[in-house]
Image 1: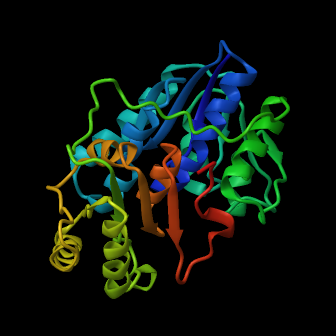
Image 2: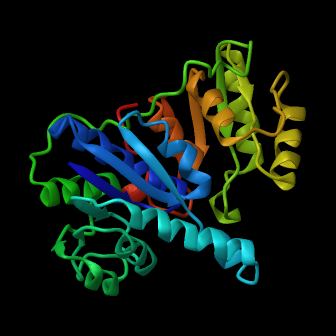
Length: 291
């Protein structure tokens, strides 16, 4: 059986869909799974050994550079790739008009959320089979239940994100053990006060752990530098790729973070993780896992 999963973004949403791959592989060991996602998250999806092929969508790039011939060329290339194979079933777990559109580009029947439970009700018009999954469930649970209903298997076992870092991935640090502080997030109202990070950092140091303060842009680096100046021995690493950040997290003794995609990645990598939620609720899209 050959299937296509459609989950485009964001990082947390993509990670919350990974257990579907593990469930499908457990129910149907010979299944072949392709996945279409936004390009920045393709490396994460590829870390699951049961994903045969990752197709990088270019919708985000087209939105940013709609005047660019190269962006339009990449956009149509994705459509061409999706049209080459015949799928036994296509599953859109995003429930948006844009994800439903991409699902329609592929060849095969489409399953997804019902009109009453999709994030954008019009998306359900693109599906051949719709399932009503309550919206008051955590995203991981919703995705798993949708897939189980569409593919006809009973859910069993705990949540399994299935991520496997390549054997060539080694720790980016020689300092062990260490804890990673994820202070950066997309919105100022989701940030934890710097004074609290400093106080926590001092407690972590007293307990014998090193501290890493990764960053993703110039402003985040300035914050990391300020925190490191107040937390003796804390390390501000050089700019990291997503895979380098994953390696840093995977080798950590623990991770503490605000509402950010890397905190979800830490959970998916089975690291002990603490989430700090200030203005957002963790009930539906918070950290979800066994650690």
